Image (cartoon, rainbow, N blue to C red; front, side, top):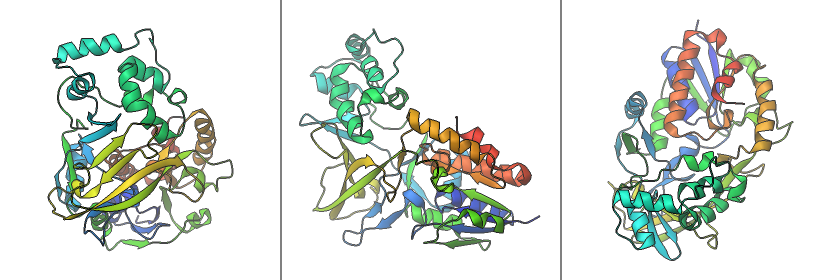
Length: 383
């Protein structure tokens, strides 16, 4: 039986679910509160420089999931791109993630891999057997000198609190390499969409069974008008924030242009706590196949997310997890509603994981629509 489906949010989750269900013959209505599709991976041409800009900050596609890689290439040609991040600390520039070049440059040495490994182990605080905080993990991971140069100031600015208040799990995702590989990601498939992410999402939504309404907010009362709702907005927003707001960090962007090449790379982090911004992104370097005389750059400033701000990173500290549990309990009781995506499940998700979960969610609905309710949120979000 073909159903009327409402999808809240025209980002990656909504577009993928919409495309899959539309192909199966369902009638799809998508609403988004913003004036554009593609969510936070929205891209557009800068009118002054002609550069393709990642409006809400850089999004680099990387995955080991061959099906997801083939899927995005159905809708847009992905060209090779490897993320090579630099960081400024103490008036010098180093490569990230921390690798053999970083270590040798920072300490003025010419160590081989095995020598560097032994050297770092000597610097690491071996008395910390079970790191609980970001700072403890860093001290056990790389020692105090590298921690204070590359992680402490940047992390304090990014999260707005001391690294002693953050969980160790945040740093466990960052690699330490004892070779000269400065490719930020290890994934087999890496690239950028030639025409931008918004063009890719537009192709996903280009289906006769899909209608899209922008500048349109969702109200819970609308769910009775549809057979099923896929909700990719903030889970606390679905309930009107009546139990309180989950914590997020948001970003402010300071745009400036430059005649020529401003910094010679796409991303330059700033590890010094005295510099208020976390990084500068130069967007023409995200499309190295293009040529532009002028450059457009953005300084990024991280701060606490307010009610009228765009949420970026879920904080997920103790108080947020407690509040999240309350919302999850209520979400499981919602009939014919699936909570999906970064905001709907209150997690930081890479794009490939977002697409994988959206594909799996759509297929689960097509297989057994009667079971695709809010109860699936328990599979996605650990309480």
